[in-house]
Image 1 (spheres, rainbow, N blue to C red):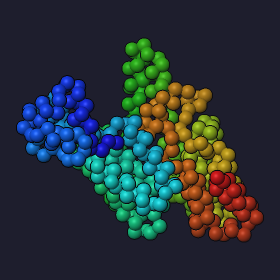
Image 2: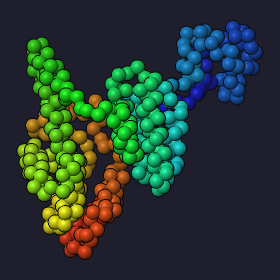
Image 3: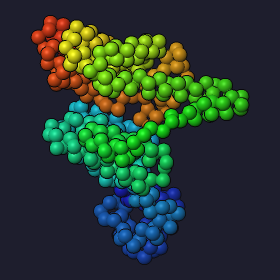
Length: 371
């Protein structure tokens, strides 16, 4: 990110043009002393001189001032992870204020605004007061609305709509979600099949393979990621719970999802443990909690999207994501949320006196809070 720095730009452009301060002063109609003060940063040119200076050096006014209203994809990614790390190490309010300053400075850089909305949504829970958490989510919603209203990027607008819906869910505003996304689900698009066949016709088998794998990967995760929600929807039906888990875990085992996408699996095990505990089945609840703890402490970190021996053509796709393949939250924040998810969930209160529960909790504390 660049600050306004007209002094440095004036010096650079004047020397490139091979003119003296006297010559520049004569052209603009000011004294040499005025040009000297501009170049040493003691004062700034009057705003009425900016178009004339920019035209003389054949550059934009933004470039003359050393001001960049937009950020590159690389800079956005770098900024996101710096702020994400800061949320784990610095006072929350200080980092939040830095986020707000950045948003204000780059209010027309819509790719940045989307990632700042993602950042706020991913870290709002770190605020101590409920009212502040809700206010931060509403800030993220406002950013999404601005992107949809002002940006002419269709895909950016679609991403903003999805994020806005997620924020409404966290705000416990389900009707807003339905108003935004509609009350029924449209058929799942299969454009990847068409694109893959196009590459085949062109003789580009490698690209066809990559596109097909991406489609398969997305559909696989969509199927398995729906499991926690479906478990909760059937929490009062023991037979259904067993069938859902059997099918989901069987598919997950075939694709080795504990290694390929451990985040999805910890959510399944966590939700299954919660449902079993609510049903009064302590033994199965503890079995699921043990699986949860095993992944959290042994196979989760470093948290990074990746392929495997089957999905061997998708790593480049991950690398091209706006935020790359890394997790959108700092590792320390993720670890603490894993632990608090067990400690603060009332569904596990009934297990508090169980020796296995105490052992699992101690394992999580020891491993997740290790420096």
